[in-house]
Length: 346
Image (tube, rainbow, N blue to C red; front, top):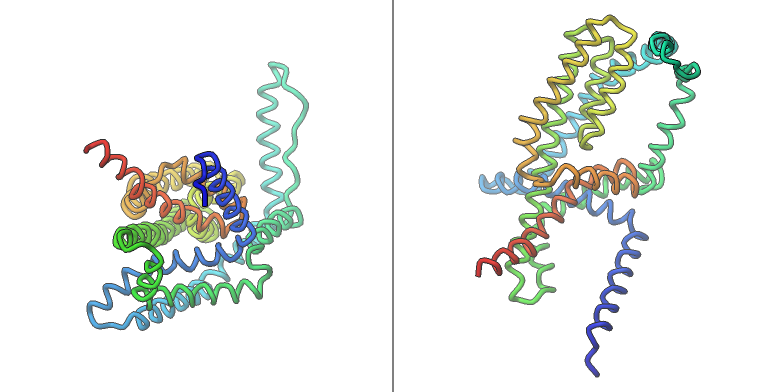
């Protein structure tokens, strides 16, 4: 068989890469579920390894974590959902008042600008639940597209948890079976890189859970102290969405300010102060300590990953985007950057 020219080899590799990307796009649903299971397993592996040193079976550790998670979820739903629903109903009832307050502000500003020839009158659009529902439904439909319906989503969640448990329990045999497909000279290094990737992704998930819980606690308590009318709603919303960087703080802050516009000046200033303190603590203490050392990504890379992930698969894509990008960055660092540094040093 004649040797291929460099141009033919490059063209063949480009075709193979394009075909792999196209196949990946067609199988995006399955890939997302597999990545979700891998990320959950990465978060559980250190706990299972630590418990195994104390003669606790890995299966018992996984089952215990799942039971604790389900228990906490049931507790939070039982405790928080009725309060959040009540505060949501109060918010909906007061939407016309918020709209009128905003329009009054706009009229006042236009009156000041009218001396310099301001343009035509502007009115804040009417805010009703009927107008909010289509946006929420579109976002939910986009997010559930990877699982094609609520019933299938539940089944997919159970499948993801099962696969994650299998990875944690049978990790050694699974790794040994996979690296057998590689040349012997590369097996040890590949296993090391895989461990680094799993550590990065798992560390991000565990850290982000802590950051989200702290953000929810700070916002709920702080907003309650300044007399805000729906502190638990904003706190729970901010904490839940905070698992996706930038989304939780932006959404909760915008909603809180809009609600505070219909309150006293003290409440509005208090809301700004609470969010300022929360952002300061999150940016300078929580994120650097719990997630910054694990992810090692530039904020622009995180933002780009969120945009791509959300565009491909809605909320689920945005959730897995950052840990996957952190893992990919670890692969590049270990296989390309460090190799190039060694060549330059040699």
